[in-house]
Length: 150
Image 1 (cartoon, rainbow, N blue to C red):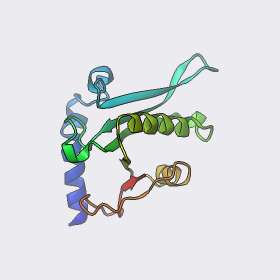
Image 2: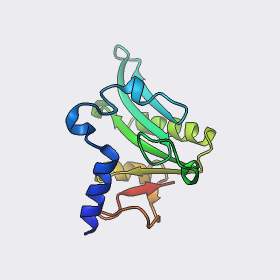
Image 3: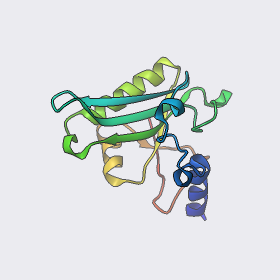
Image 4: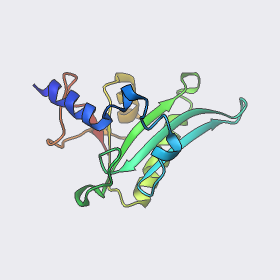
C-alpha cells in the first residue's frame, strides 16, 4: 500500500539512527559538516542567547550520501524546529530564508521537504511559498502527499 511504501521510504532515509542513538542530532557537528549540507540556528539575543530554532538543509535527497548527478539541483530540508515560546515572530521564516539562500548559492533550483504536521504544512505553504510536490516518484502516505516543494 502507499502508506507502507512511505513508511519504508522514511525508515530507509532515517536508517536505524532513531533507535541506536547514532543519528545526525547526536553529533550535529560531524553529521552536518560538509560542502553539501548546512545547519543554521536561531539565537534569542534577548533571553541569555540560547538557541531557539534550527534548520538543516542538504543538497540531494539522501541524508548521508552525496547527491547524485540528477539531484544536484535539489536541496532538502531535513530538520526544522522553533521553540514554541517564540513561534509566530519570524524566526521560522528567517531560518527557511537562510536555508533557501544557501541552497540557491550551491546551485539548487528546487527545495523539497516532508511533513505530516498540519501546523507545519500551513507554515510552509502559507508563509514560505511551498506547494504539494507533483513528483510522482516520491512515495505517498495515509496522510496523502507529505512532500512539499518550491
